[in-house]
Length: 377
Image (tube, rainbow, N blue to C red; front, side, top):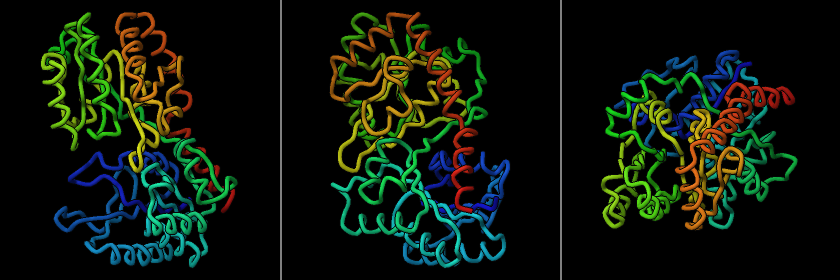
């Protein structure tokens, strides 16, 4: 198939991790299909107008003005379609650009699909214009692909259930290769030989890292050498550092910042428990949670906030635990249970790895997407 994608968010020279989940999906698709992505660019990046990255034809459009960018997308889709005769037009994320893409698909008579993520979907917080743009986008679409049951519940406000499908994101195993011996990696990062709790996230309120910190003092009373490693950066970092001092966690909490895929893999490998207390409020939404799946792929028990789309990746009581974000008592109880029970960690981790390997790899997700496309081509 000849496939055309449009996305606001996509890896850039400045932020290579931005929208990496979109890139991973398209890279898997490009193994058997001709895949093009239209996205934003900047003149300072000095990227060519078109380049092939990971088998994907990447077209970056340079425009500071959103209206101009939308117009450029309209022209680019038509131009590329004249050359490649696309089978499908598919837009990731929602906004006025998605409406333009849908309109263009009608003009060139190609089936149009939309992937809906959680951000900005909640009708109780979305503006009138945003709700209008989403409704129009969904009206143009043959199907709306939701990344979780939670996002589907929001999407149903804008379009009927029969138009909605759920295809959760996947992970790429080739990206998750251990490159360092666990003992030497622990020594390099001064992690010691004790329990390591890991969080990987943009340091934002919705990730609930502050909740995790609030229960650590009671756990550390019994396990003083425990380490809590936080990978990521964001606007909440200064607040979280204040909490480290407040709770006297200086010897236990390690802020790592963003790391390479290689180092991220090694951190997953040496960790014992993965935890994020994802929570939802207004526009702050956890649509799915790729990191839960990545941790599970390493056979780690996962504790997740019972919010947004986390239940699509964590099976409560089997691959980990789902906890209401503000239930600190239960969070402390489950953390202590895992910290103090190696056999339970191993048992839950084994279930997690099996579940992720059987259901959450990109090769399965891409197969579902192609099957969906085929119904409308």
